[in-house]
Picture 1 (cartoon, rainbow, N blue to C red):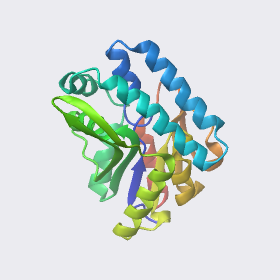
Picture 2: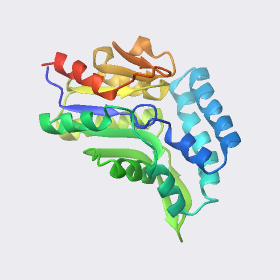
Picture 3: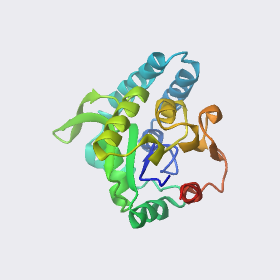
Picture 4: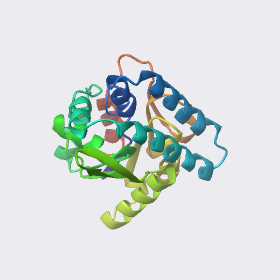
Length: 229
C-alpha cells in the first residue's frame, strides 16, 4: 500500500524545541513555562479516557494565551521565527513534495505560531490544522478554539475522506498521548513515535528516537515510507 498523506504533530516533531515553551522562555517567562509544560504532560499521562485527555490542551493553552497577550505580536513573531528545526525536517517535506505525498500539520499550537515558523524555514505543508485565535491592534485578542486530541482525529478523518485517501494510506507522526486518537485511526502499522517523550509504543510499530536522543533526524521517517511501496 502506497502512502499518500503524512500527518505530523508539530511540537516535539518538527521544531528543535517546543514552540510554546521556546516562546515563553525567550520572553522571560521560564518559571511560568516550566509549570505549564509539567501540567500539560502530566495531565496527558494521568488521563484515563479520551474525554479527560481532551481537556488538558484547552486548560493549558488558555493559560499560555493569557501570557502571550502581554506582548506585541511583532515581537512574538520575531522570536518564533528564530526557532530552528530538527535535522531533516526540510529534507522530509521536500521528499514528500517530490513523491506527490500530501503533508498535514495537526497541532494544538495556535495557527499564527505554526505559520510564522514554517514559513521562515520555507516549509509549506498542504494542510495546517491548529488552535484558532484573533489578533487585534497588534496583540493576541481571543483564543477561539483549541485543537484537542479528539479534534485532531476528526480533522484527519475529514481530510482523508475529502481527499479520498484510506487510513491505511496515511502515516501519523507524533511524540505524545496527544496523537493517540490519530494513531488509532490509521493503526499501529501506520503510526510513528518520533522523538517521543511519553511511552506511546503500544500505539506505534515504528519507534524513532526518544526525547533526549541527540542524533534525532526527521528524515528517518522516509525509510518507513519506502517500506510501504
